[in-house]
Image (cartoon, rainbow, N blue to C red; front, side):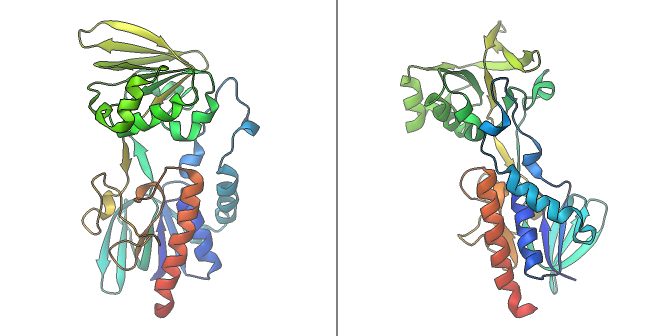
Length: 301
């Protein structure tokens, strides 16, 4: 039996893992890959890497420390986590059953995708999913935000403080009834295109154009320096959906020490109910979760 299993190999999971190793815990990371969302970064024709502040360097340091420790990681997705007499059982996709006294869930979240031609080809080349991360790169630029909920409203508002022009593409515009939405409606550099949907993304080396279809089926083109798909974040919490408390978005509810409502289970990063989907925030939460797990495990060691 392990002292601790860390599920997920992104910024939060990697940080938690390194902290746990340094606390001399018998720990195992179970993950599909190492690096998580830091494996993707937005490329733009007018931006050099040195101009962007990223958490990638920190994560890569932890990643390099872990890569040579074969015994400390198991590269496989997790299907389910359940209670056991002495702790918990982590069931992997291949049918493996790993027993542990405590668990840190750091499985992140995935973006709802458009599923249109050009999306895959231009992903992270002028097209991406996080205005919160990349908005500062679009000073005096033209941008497009695609989405019909609070995430799209927040992203449009942030871009509106920096970009020359923001186009919000939405189907209903219901989220515009919020205070932030009402501000967008009156913003001089924001154009709201209701009852429109994106049917294709076009470009050369980078995404340059989105093809729109209105409610009558009429097609039109919109040129942009950057396009953001901000439809929804879907937390990867399904493996504990019937075990611990989730919020209405499906995120794992945690307290200020990243503890869940089940003693022995902790969560960190985008899968948890924290604030802001940022690499450095996830790194901090991973450290907190590991320290909380260590405090929980001390009487059991």
